[in-house]
Amino acid sequence: MIVFAALGAKALYLTYIWLGSAIIGSHVSERKGYGAKVGLASGLILSAVGAIVWLLIPSRADSRWRLQGPFGRGGKTVAEARAERDAKRGGGG
Image (cartoon, rainbow, N blue to C red; front, side, top):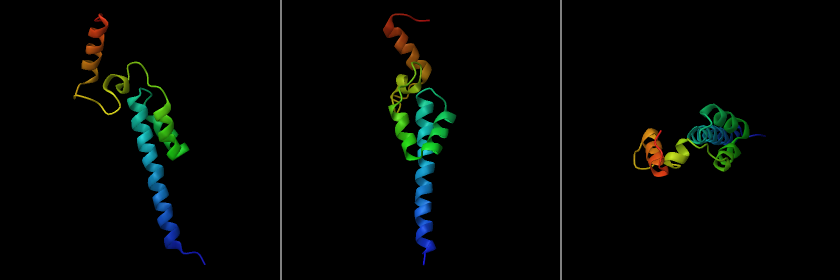
């Protein structure tokens, strides 16, 4: 005899993990400059592995990940971070 309540609870937890990995994959891929849809798709298809994959993929040059860091720092906008980076390089568009 199958206990449907126990099966339902496990399925609910697995669904939360699946949706959570899609959200994390979408957020990380957008910060790395690839767009949210790519991360969402990989998070939905690869489940929990999808979020980990996006942590290993290198970020693009003008992405929020490179300019502000993984979590953002100092409340700077991307434009301010780009201007600061260009000033350090000695150029200025």
